[in-house]
Length: 412
Image 1: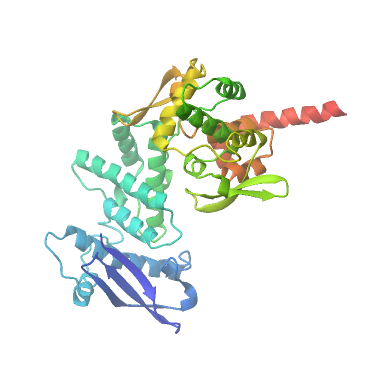
Image 2 (image 1 turned 90 degrees about the vertical axis):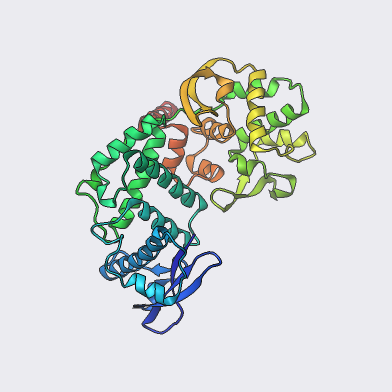
């Protein structure tokens, strides 16, 4: 896939802005644009003007976007092989009839392409954002196929989004999933709106309702049953030990399975685990609680044998079933056939998946340990994100405040 980036090659003020077009092994061409900028106003890491909020930066960014959009659109729409040269680039960007004109033919699919490529050039962009962009773009493409038309950015208004939501519901997607996709489309639209492109008059009024997701976790009584239940095989015992450890370590399974004896660090008499979290690429020191130490002692101070995510999911369901977690509970069960989560009432062991450990840690220690300290362990960046994760709202917090104040008064 072709990528278009911008760069400056000089410290002179002003410095000319160059365009670099790469198209696999077929082309890698630099082209000097008619634009220039002070090196102090240019971000080398983001490959764009630093301040895109002021009028000049916003205007320049819009012009550069227009150039990139013209080239990508021309390459995507061409039905023949294009020999890319500097002359071809100059011809494309100087053509006034462009698909991505600011206020008219700004196709939504092209918005996703440009947004994706723009974010891809930023070294700070997470891979998850790029994947999400392509995922939402594919959903919109399916919607366009059903409607038999291509939509413009200008088409995205309250009515459009309402119909898009109906389409997703007809495809049996959960409301929480629909909410996240609506939110993402609006974010992409706002990105272009901030660059000067026109959006619908009621674009800012687009909203979607989120449905509170079920927060399956293992409480302390259930964990006790799991610990006490004898496991018939070594594989299940290994998985059980990981499950208990995860409920007292609070890590994502992608980080959990990378824990080993060589990652253990002692700070005085305190035991820590040195982890670089895979999702956030952040290096963190995770505290090892007493319960975890008990399970490390079984293996001469080492963690259990690592296993694949798929096997872990299968094993811990069996572990919980053996432990007697057969009571009925409301939750969401993944259907492999439809590849959708289905809400309903199931036996508790059926609802247990690999992320149950992190949520159990957060839920069970909430109210016992200050949230600021729990954030350090779980890796959540904000208190709000943490509370959403365990399903706590403002009423819960207010109730806890009243309980806390009552304890204070009882002391006096």
